[in-house]
Length: 181
Image 1 (spheres, rainbow, N blue to C red):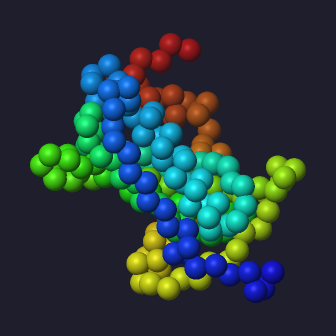
Image 2 (cartoon, rainbow, N blue to C red; image 1 turned 90 degrees about the vertical axis):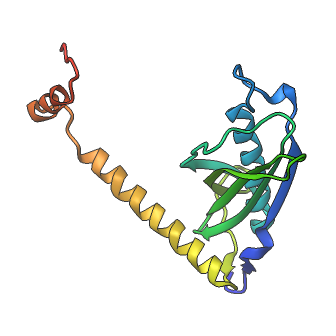
């Protein structure tokens, strides 16, 4: 396993798709769920390309829809593995849309999908160790590591928080919330 290294750049995937009326929500904009489905597909492609294994989505971190996407725009998604654990990989995804007539490009979304390599029995498998070749990859790796550490601290806080105490109940009332227990 010591010789099992792969360049992060080997995980890069780009897809583009024209947005059709069938992809819209009730307000006529492209449905966020459709965009999430495409993001999940490209995250799978990037993780599987890097790891050489079947991968599943373990979590999705921070999906902020920054700008609406219109019918007729060309959506482009770029993904790459940013961080590698033992069996998990954090895939960064950037979504832009382009008005084909005007050429105007909008940043619509950036998100991070944690993908896990699996074997035929559905068990986690070790994935290759990363080879980092650019300072941009260094930045992305450390940012992913920082997000993972922050999430662990947040989860630990949530586990230790006792929501049943009088102080916790009174804090809700301080936020102009009616509590009827």
